[in-house]
Length: 125
Picture 1: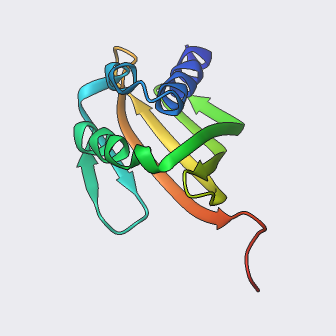
Picture 2 (picture 1 turned 45 degrees about the vertical axis):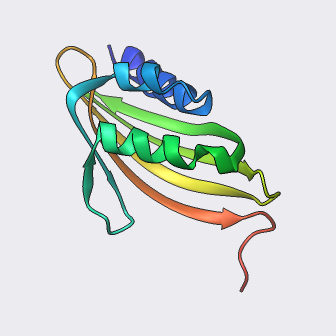
């Protein structure tokens, strides 16, 4: 079961990469919530996906590279890097640790993302 949940977490991210909002939403429970460390608080999965969909036109490409996944029943914790290129030519990476909580039906019920954007070329000291 834990490999199945790991695969579902990856399938969710692949759907986002492909701008397949319907598939991403279908992997989530109706009451799923999302939290980011941006100080904005929680949002529903609908709000989160609508926000991504609204900003995606400025994204030329986006790829989630999963570095590691840990799981236990009903939960997956993973570390990944999102490699992003914008239509204006900016490139960078989002380094993230993400918690996925799943309900008994195997749908995502909770996402918590701790992320930090790093521009191409690294950080200024």
